Length: 277
Ligand SMILES: [Zn+2]
Image (cartoon, rainbow, N blue to C red; front, top):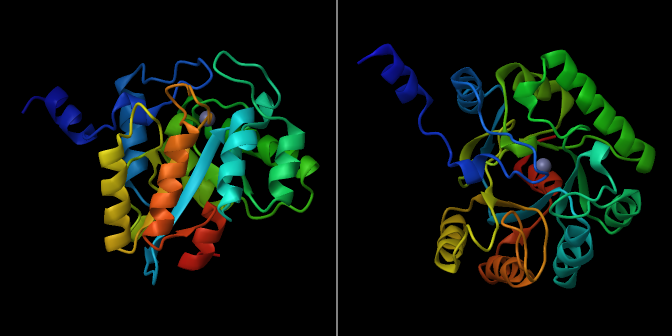
């Protein structure tokens, strides 16, 4: 095998582009260099912290990245209507901004969600892919994210993190072991048996990317294996962007989970259930 082929073989399987990087704010977060892709892949595969999942009942978590106003006004309301709560990852440098695809929620939404029992999580301040930052820049950026959130919510503690665009690098991932309770990726898969706490697996909940048959299969599988199924999405609208979901899809996933006896918990509370402090 040629060296180039070996490198390519070593970095497979790469998640499909759609799963890797919601180009949610118009930034180009694709890998320009093979070295960036390798760094992400190694980071993805090398666990620093892990946990064993042994659940009596399966769990589903719904998470919203960035997050648009509609995630608060429509997404959270749907969850609340069924007695459930979600996780909202905020990139504080974007708060209240009108972007190409949506308007990002502001501090009032963050306060309202927190008071309503939802989880507010870290998503960096700048919303840059972590591999584009040095370790020092990443730590500073995450610190700014946490400080901004804690100015809004002084009682916030022990936050979880979601990687912008789902992209990671080794040194940043290692830092997260000290900086976040756990981190959610966009790597597809059910969280079951032994999980990487710095790379929790999640499926994108989008109307274009998750057909009903696939959703049914994921819920059946999670229920049968007593696993922890995590969804991520962005906007919730009747005509969602390709990174978001319709109220009908969110409701179908939620009711499908409830019907199967799954507990609907924010990522924070799922970690507690699993025994992660
Ligand atoms: Zn994001």
